[in-house]
Image (cartoon, rainbow, N blue to C red; front, side):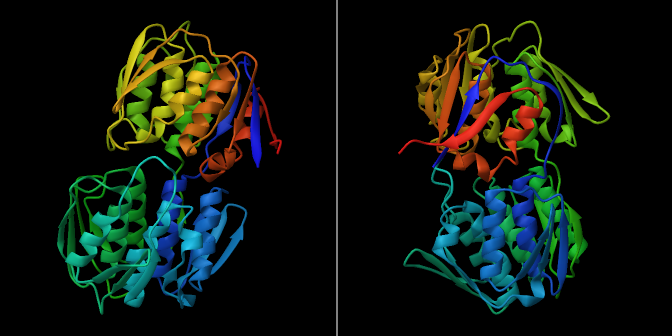
Length: 419
């Protein structure tokens, strides 16, 4: 198993380019199975989760070809309707094949999903919606078995906004008979990107980016060529990296509109953030101010930036309160930050951070994707060496993060852990 070693105390300076968004690429790649032909996707990041979904598509019989950041998916070659446990267990987004398989083949057998240990994240809202569309669904031996001659349009209300639930049902509705209305739908940019892709394939979709999305299904969908949107969470992570190191970083290839809540909070903390024609210019101020944060569904402050922002608050002057409303287990990284000298008290879904305590390097362990990023950020800001184990999590969502940070002046390297 590998670990990343970070030598702290180096100011980050320069320019960094943002990769394509993992959370946009995953459903868009999967949507390729809805078309009877070859779709082309550009700006696809080279990540472990992307490789997992391509392996899953190949297991379904789909021809997948890669050339750098370009991926071709030929939906005409699909011949299998089962997504097995050995592929689905490592990545929750694998459940996104359920709706498209059911819509395209009339049947699907998908293992119940796994992924990061940050909360239950049940798929009951996906299944409830598909049942409303006429699917017969059974849960047996750890698998979802679903059948439908042809899905029918329906009005579906989500008890809570769910990104993957919205995406799964949008893809299913794109080939369903009639009109489907999703109420209390997720509004994330990744949902909008998928809706735009499905529209170009021949579905008629309105309301993406609002709480109500209306999908008029098509008898057949056609292949498309799509550019994957930039990763807003990677953008936010590099914003925090510049701030915690007293740095001056130009972040290119990003979409500032996709992370307005993060930009607002970082500015409140005393960091200069300018929207540049090329992206975002982030310059650390003379000090860091304490700021309270509450995670919310988009367009609120993203839960995927909570751990990284907590590192910034560890360095702030004063007390800050961070409330996590999305996932129940998303403060696991707190224990590791305490090992580095952070003073954080957790009560339920609230963490109180007493800033101003210097961070010091220590051996720590990553517990999920965004916790991994937060520990790297803490290592950049700390005195001495920080050794981060179980870094396979970071490879799920950050493309070449060590190379990008090193190009900005950070000193970090990957090595094997001792037995």
